[in-house]
Image (cartoon, rainbow, N blue to C red; front, side, top):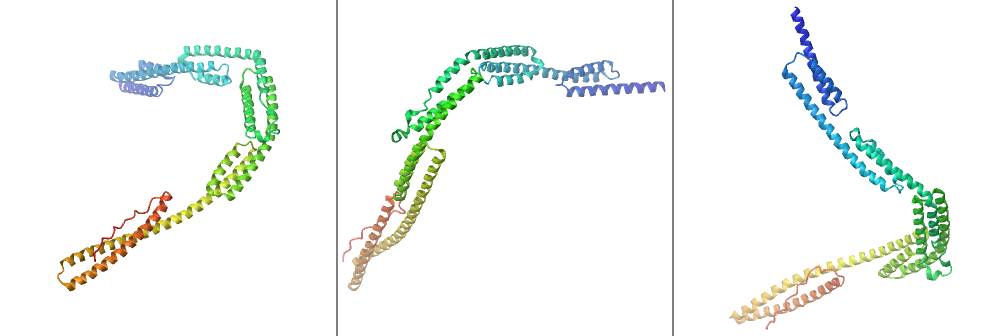
Length: 415
């Protein structure tokens, strides 16, 4: 009894140890890429030392599996180190971009981007992290120095912008009031040039890191003052150009009502171009251009009507041509039969030995010759009509419906 009891205890101990080792190996398999792997590995080794009651083959199998898992862990760690080192190199390049933007408004955004990526760099690149952070702090120091210098030179830059703003043309020599007839094509583009120049100066002021906020505000006030003067000149220009647009519109309307389609289309194209070149209020320009589009639609309808009329004429011509060709071809066939019969009768006449039959053949020949002449005349008349229709088609650049078949000249007959 005693021996049997100890045997059962040892058996349970062996089975329990084996079960625990297998569970540890399973856990190690799941945690190869987890930081807890090292602690689990330590526990596995300790369990292997105290476990008893299993064969050397089982021990070797457990150790073999453990070694494979440890090799996987080692490969994973080596790969992580390489990844982190590569990421550190990329961050170093990113710092190059940050350094290039020390004097730019984009510096802050690029700095935040670097810091966000830097925080993702793991413990495997500790040395590289330290170097990167030291370099980043040096770049931020350069940024602070730049901002300090900006205060000293802001006044000088503001004076330069004032000179530029005041040099923008905004009076235009009193035009267009004094010379509305001579300058209406030019004044609009001059206003546009001044406005674009002012917009470009304002853009530079807005993005200039050197200028301080109070100085920017004063410069913006100067820009707004010059812009208002340009707007006053523009209103006067609108009035003069509006008069010219009304004249062009009246001229083209009269032409559309009276001229042919081709001439009206050319004039309408020129009017459309002229309206677009004028300096008009958007609503006025849209109204004129929309009216011109309506004129185009009217011309389009006229062209469509003419096209339909032409198509009807064309179909009528081609239909007539087809009928004439069919009649002509049938007449030619008849003519060929008459000519063949005539030749056969002439041959019979030569061979005839009867006076009575010869006279009968001669009457046939005479009758055939008359038919030949009549049919040849009809064929020639039909060919003439066919040619006339095809000449009409050619004048319109259209291919003929069918090439005419020219009838042969009637054979000369002897009575």
